[in-house]
Amino acid sequence: VSNVFKNDVSSGESLCPCMPSLKGRLAIDTTPKYWSDIRKEDFSIHLKNGHFWQTQCRARQHLAIIIPFRDRESHLKIFLNHIHPILQRQLHNYGIYVVEQANNDEFNRGALINIGYLEAIKDHSDYSCVIFHDVDMLPEDDRNLYNCLDHPKHLTVLINKSNYRLYYRTYFGGAGAIKSDVFEEINGMSNSFYGWGGEDDDLYNRLKSHGYKILRSSKVSRYTMLNHTEADAAPSRFNLLRMGTRRSKYDGLNSLRYKLLSTKRDKLYTKFRVTFKKSN
Ligand code: BGN
Image 1 (cartoon, protein in one colour):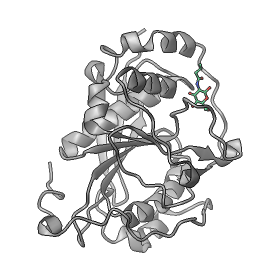
Image 2 (tube, rainbow, N blue to C red; image 1 turned 180 degrees about the vertical axis):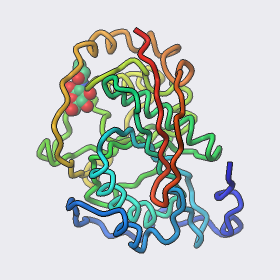
Image 3 (tube, rainbow, N blue to C red; image 1 turned 135 degrees about the vertical axis):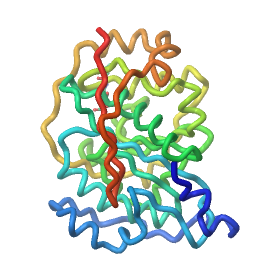
């Protein structure tokens, strides 16, 4: 475990301002990228293993940005090229973790986010804020702050694909920010949702049943979603969702069985390649 945050030269200096100077509305660049070009950008200079730590001031929060992933390298490049400069302007300390599902079962977004969290806090025990983030979501405004408040915050509120309207009142998919201790209190996400749909609604229900509300700052939480073919919705999701809050105590961070196949340390990200077994 390295101590980049703890031994950081800035640790004696004053806290970073709450309201950093930002750009507001951003240009969205969805053109294909080469890794070599991204590494040449200014924002890459101080990156190591996808980590960045402020040196001018003491960051208020340490963010573990967790990206559930499989077969989307072209999106990953566009996403990283877009998100790094925003996170740096917002004056956070952060680490970007890509969690890749190596088993051939249907995609399991919940299990991947749980694994990302457990591996991220092994990497740096002082992450105070978990940000789960789909790789195809590009924020259009940097006033949409990637930080954790006492209650969970939904980030992807207005998406171009839905004509910038919230999908539905209880929607908590895409990207969101949850304090690490809250994420542990709710036992993370369910590991049982394989295939498309429902795992984000289950997370919403968990948070609600523990007395949390979902915060949204609607005007600036605008996103461009990258195009891809849509997965078929999983028929099992309805039953899982119905029994969700009853299962939450024993289905989550405390019941994960997985293997970490490899850890790749790139300048722009840390990637965990993992496998896990379907239990039924
Ligand atoms: C919902 C899905 C979410 C998904 C959103 C937006 C379900 C559960 C069925 C009751 N929920 O319908 O997982 O994020 O659409 O696409 O399928």
